[in-house]
Length: 610
Image: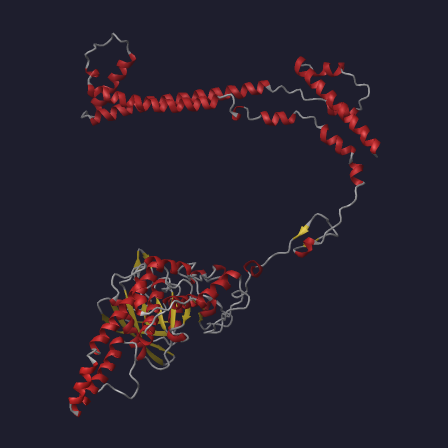
């Protein structure tokens, strides 16, 4: 085997030397056949003769044609630049003459006169002509400067095109040089050495790929069959791949199989907390940078649109990226068995103060396709109050007018408007809702002074609305369900209102507030609640204002006199006077709770008269 390799190497070397000599001779004489006839061919095989025959193609004519094409292109480009230069000069002179006070035709006449002067001999006109005046020379100088710029650009372009070193001048040179290489240099060697390859030891197979894919080794050793990967493997979770669409009110708990991103988001939202005292609250409300940093560190917990990838859901969502989180979404009763689409509505249950389950329902503004679903939800959930925080239109439609002017029947539910009360910053509509022989009362608060993705101009009206809604909730029937709150998408203004309502109760009852924890809990139930950093900052300002109102009310109702003077006066006062002060104190406590609007007097008790 070693001797055969030596012989083949010597033959290949000799054939290479002979092909190189023939190629050089062809370049000198230009006659390929005669040169090949004079060359000794005594020991060459027919295959070697065929492979050693070089190409007779002369590259010089092609290079000349390519160079001539470049010159022609440069000439056309130079002509175009010259024409552009001439037109620019004439147009520039005409505009400048018009700016100097000439009208259109006189200005054009002066331009033609100037052009005629420039194209004529030096002795054809008098040296004292009007054309040499200063106001005539200024346009000429300006246009000449513009012309120099245009012509200079064109000249540089032409020079760059005609530079011999430019590789683009000879685009086929590299291809031709590669084609001149003798073909036998590689093919002959591999043909002669095939039997050597076959004698090599086979590479042992390794089972590494068996860990990742299936291989078809029995049919085709080089064909790989990759196992298709489903949605569950791609996203690392099957929490929302199977939805219970038929059972109303069903909530899906957090599954055990969560992707790392979902797990980290839920862990952060479940553990986030920043408890603030009144002093810390006032200070934090003024620190914009810290609030913005805290807002952007808190995950939004949005839902992937692929979670609801089944037919018909798209037309039930106002925004394709704002979807209800699966574990807390509201499920409507199916109209027919197996009608999954009729159970869907873009709404979520939210926890209230103290972790109260289903205290609120956050939903999107109803669309034309979901008005019936909205009223079905109102009836199914026994909702006593609707809070609407959006206009019907704000540049685009934000919400459909889902209530009637007088009365209407929708989805076997009769809705009748009984009373409309107009306040300064909101309006109140009182409805009666009837279905299946049962009648209920429904109140709708429509707050219109809050633009989308922004904050209201004033905070006190929002606090007044929160107090009114809490008062109406207390007077609702015992079996009443959650309060429905919606804006357009159901996350921005809706989140601010619900967070303000919960945190006002916490501040009134506990004296401290945890805005970060409340926001995180809301986003666990519905992703994206409190949509912007500006809204997050506004919630802090509203609570800071509410704390000041509580303190001022407390100071007005509970003055702090000197303790010694109070004790001495109490000793000198009569029994009847002490009783009168006690009655006044009890009235003050009850009046404070009524003013706050977030505490209720125990049943069976009443405020004593002063």
